[in-house]
Image 1 (tube, rainbow over the protein chains, first blue to last red):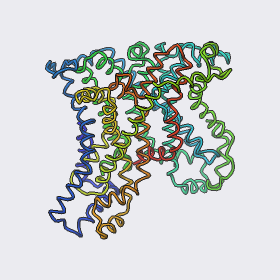
Image 2: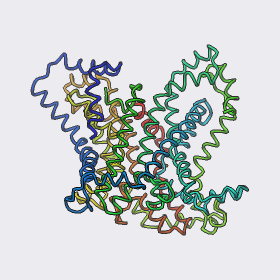
Image 3: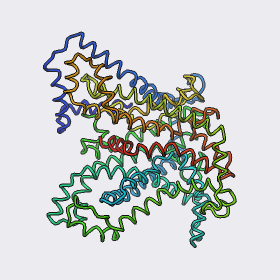
Image 4: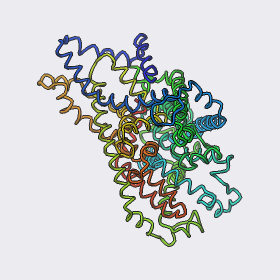
Length: 341
Length: 290
């Protein structure tokens, strides 16, 4: 399932020259081979070394990453309780049920909402903060450490901490009360109109530091000379940002958006910890992953759970491929496009 | 926006290199507000552990008054907490070791050998980066169960190594490619084999990259929740995240103690992070920018 995703472009990309990266790589590959033609024994030795060195990683990776995904595809066609061999073949019935289940329509809507709002909220704020923090201010390295703290704390801790703060008798309502905004107190976690916005606040809080740090690194790789030249030409601060910084930050932003999209589609821990698998659906925060766990393992329907996993996988794959094809294409230096070298 | 614009303007006249001054107060103000928002919830958790439940009920957002050290003392005296710390440490260290050793060997092949299928192999690992564990968790659970590894840390460690490999390889390959060919040629003229070159030159030279990937693997394992949730159902095998959640639901009325337990469990990741911040950030951004 995964091979065609990465493997196909590799083959096709051999034909058209793909800029300096491909050319450089090809030249390197040719040079060591040319001066010393390999003998058979050297060839065997090389193959043995490759097998010994790369073998263990490939075995572990294939058995615990690729194989389970393939297994999910297989079990998805069965009604199976998880014990003994799967025998009750039901064809596409599991998939029909998934697509007719209104609870699944809900989770799709929630995931879409989270995906779009994550980009719309975190992206602009993170870019502005990165521009701001990229100025030479004192204590920049401490600031960098501190804004990264939420990202490094585990989802469980974030979930429990925010869960306690947002409950009706929690710190947020207490704070609102004590500063005279008692009228804005709300049932942040169980009111279906508010809960998903609370989730968005928590997600933004947890992950925006990552975006800022990423953008800061991107900004620092832009050569100072460009700014100097523009400043000498009399460009204003905002002209410089708009015409130099933002376009050059583009590749970093696009990679960040990709990671954010994939993360939004897989969101599980925070929702599961704060709302639990049953409350999440009434509060309107359930995601594909919590749906999968609630209807798969928890209820013992492993065939159905596997089918949900396959649907999740395909949705992620399609979005990832579309994104790679139409958005990441331009960036030859991205990590995910490096496989095409 | 207006706030940002006003102080930024005068700066433009000077070339950016000359800035030795303090920068504008508005920048500091916004940075301060942002950091306060980032740290507020964390401080709430830590301070909450120093309060008692009646303080928390009466004033949910208040400061400890008086400071109460009993919650932290009780958690630190509980064998359950330390057992979970131990389990998390074993899982984290074993995962780190596995990811680093297997990742370094595979990256060496990808970076320094030319062979048919090299690109396909790289793509295979790179594709793994796009699909986190969530998608594979149900069959992964069945696989681990069939291997007889339920309720054992090995059942968590092996999949974590597998899922840690893509990031590790993507970070390490450019690192190993950057080692100049001349060094390898010199080593080969001196009679060192490719493998000898790997152990004598590559391992020491790639140490910074190895440390980065090792820390990423450790922190990811320390924080991981979904996989232990599926694999470890016996309380004795719980890692810290599972333990924290179990504690929170078991003592849901004792908010102060839950907060103490929670804040103690985040200390190791925070210490690790502050010590190696530069490497973690460098590794992450390096991985993302390729």
